[in-house]
Every structure is written in C-alpha cells, then in structure tokens.
Length: 394
Image (cartoon, rainbow, N blue to C red):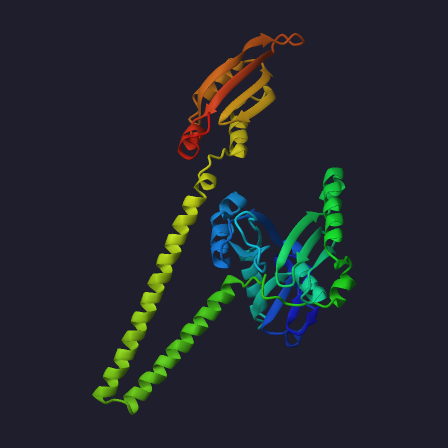
C-alpha cells in the first residue's frame, strides 16, 4: 500500500512484489515500512558514552552476538537514557541494538531501482505505527501479525523497549507465561498502550517516520557518495573553465592554487585527526572489553560433530558433561578401547583417560559400560584467568 512517500510491505525481503502497482503510482524517493520480523534486537549494558561511541562499541561485539552469521548487518542503537538528565555511572543505561541484514536491504534497493524507484530508507512497522500513534508522547504498542508478536515502547523521540516472540514459541507454556507477564508489566507502566493485530488496522493506521531507526541500503549510500563526487567534479570543471577563459593572469592563477592547496591541507588535517581519534577510541574500547572479547569459548557444535564421527555406530553415550574445557562422558558399547584410542589420536583432544572402569552389561554380554574423560587442547581457561582475574582464588 502506498501513502505519500511511504511504502508498506508485509512480505519477506526476497519476495517483495509490486505487480499490482504501476511505476507511475510509486513514490521516489521512498521509505519502506517493513515487517518487524525482518529486524533483530539485542540489549546491551554499556557505560554512558556518546551515540557514535555506543555504535562503535556495539559493532565490536557483532561476532559474539551473532556467531556463525556471515552476512553483513546494518545497525542502529538507542540508549534508554539518551534524552534523560539522569546519566550516571551508578545507573548504567541499557542500549537497544537493532540489526537488519545488509544484503536483503541491497536486494530490495536493486529490485526497486529497476522500476525507477529510489529506496532511501527502511524502518520497522512497529516503530512507524507507534511514532504515528504516540505523536511525541511516551507510549507502548503491541503489534501482532501471522508470524510474530512485537512489544515496543517509545519515549517520544526514540525506542526504549523492543521485545519480540514468534507465534510458534507461544505454544510453549513457559514462553507464553513470560510473554504475558511482560505485556502486563508494560500495560501498567505506560498510560498510552496501543494494540494492532489486523492487516486492515495496519493499512489504515497513522504512521510517522522518525529520525531513527532508519536503515539506508549500502547501495543507496554508494549512490549518494558517487553523486557528491560528481557534483565536485562538475564544480572543479566549471572553475577550471572560467579560469582558462577570463582568469588566466598569473596573479589569479597563483591565488586559486593557494586556495586549493590550503583547502586540501585543511581536509587532510581533519581526516587525520578523525582517524587518530577513531583509532584511540577503538583501542580504549578493546582494552575495556578485553575480558569479554578474549574469553575462551568452546564451539560445542563442532565438538559434537567431531565426537559423532569418532564414536562407532554400535556405541551410544548415556552421559555428557562439559566444564572449563574438560569433557566427561559415559556410554555403552562393545569396544570402549577402540573409542579411547581414536580420541587419543585426535589432534583437538588431550589427557584422554578412562574415568570409569569398563564393566560388562548384564543384559547383553557383548556390551560394556565405560566412562572417558578428556581435555580440549586449545581451550586455555587458566591463562585467561591468570591474566584478567589473578586475584580470584582458583
């Protein structure tokens, strides 16, 4: 549905269909109001920093927040006390980080660009709805569709809460009870509480486009940069043409050259200062968050896949425990010694030994109960503790 310079979509990024709308009906440039499930929110506790520093600190934790997800992500961050006078170290503000897949945003940009539509920005439906309903006031919204439930709060200028749950998770009693508890708490906390749950209500509701969260596709950013460079080239070309025609005296040439050199020097000095400040800020943040970033982490998925290849098909595990890089497991099989030898020869494991004597299974004479313990070779928890927590008793 098209309204002014806003497009609303209820499909997935790879399935946006505009077949029923002619190119002349579509606004350009346009802002796309997208379904909430396109976005992923994480909550972080960071020290009171400026918006740019919070953005950089959040980006440093991207790999730990989304392990194994290789696609680039767009990010917008919101501090719950960003517009509050209370901003002390004792009251550390919570930061909401909202993420969007950058490849999906570029795919949308390309699809619309083929129809002569310039996609300037993408924002979540729940935010646009709440900004339109609250009109600058503090309020909360429960937005429901066929895929998910989204609970958001708005302090008049930016997001202060974002909670989301899929409909499939609502079939689990524990998850459902926790979700209902969160909804009831938000109802009591906010005097203005809205609920929107039908497609007709979404299409007829008043929406507003806040200053953020707005996600700009990377290809749109590249387009803007190229357009800026082209304008600069045109300006330089005109200046050179005027110089060649009417301002060709040595004095004017020297004056223009001096102005250009001073401008170039000023630009280089500013870029150098910005790079230096960014580098120093990055080093400070990396040192501050080193206990988190350098914490040893075991890839349990890789461990399970490795053990699955080593354990014979006629052997099964009855117990598995992982703690501080140490694995303890028990099982039943006809030949525990074969598994013990395979583990000892594996490059990722060390200190492999029987933790429980091999005992025959009473019901089946060809089966034996066994226990094995081993250590991950590259998991050095002790060095980490000695470096960052030497005063803590081990």
